[in-house]
Length: 312
Image (cartoon, rainbow, N blue to C red; front, side):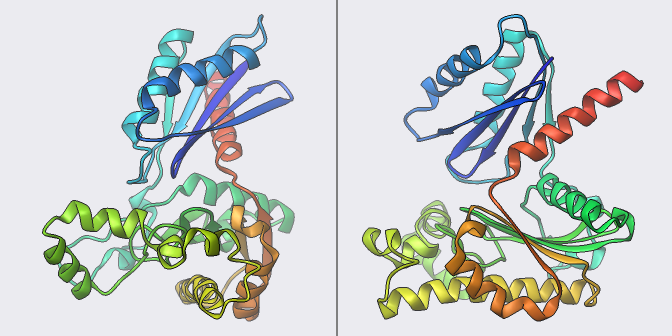
């Protein structure tokens, strides 16, 4: 039995193939001009990784929440085509579940605008489950703050096994590698008016802002080792904003926090983590689980789906 999982994330699609105890992965960068050949490339990788006598039991993909190059239509289209080719079902794991959120968190301050969420809650729930097991504490009785620190930044509060509030660098949260995060709305309106085009303004704040917006290519490459005062200021502001949002979520949980979980590729960076931790250490126990857990979390979802099939 084999399971294929696909995680559409930022400007790439991560693919994992589980065959018994073996789990092989591969990352595919998606550029605006290579969408047509990407499916063939992924198919070729699957053919080389899938054992000859093994059948593909299930394909699981995340509901893409990004407005970058990877759109849900792209990844879902590829997954659907693969499902037809291998004669198997494609299951889409939702990125968010508004019904779980605290109703107070949905109030924006004006009835004209509803607060939305962008974030892969299945990763948050996976990390929280793993931490609950280590603490030997039921998820239903645990509270966690999870910060998934990658090319995009997602921070959320979990209580009773559910994500009750969340922010991301795509909207109200801290800035990320290319996204502006929350910015003064008056100046955003001015930017839209100056450019005369909403789409151009959105492209600037979602693809040409953040760390890369402030730094030139050379400074960005050396951001964590640079002694340039301007670079140090930007990278310190990066950790500062993330720490500030984590602190806000401690208020959401009324200070009752079992652990603060830091994950994502940025959690591998000791300089960044040190700067961040020294700002939040007093809030509670901090657990660092570096790396992207999108594929692993989706694989767990896939196994749960197959288990339900067997039991039904």
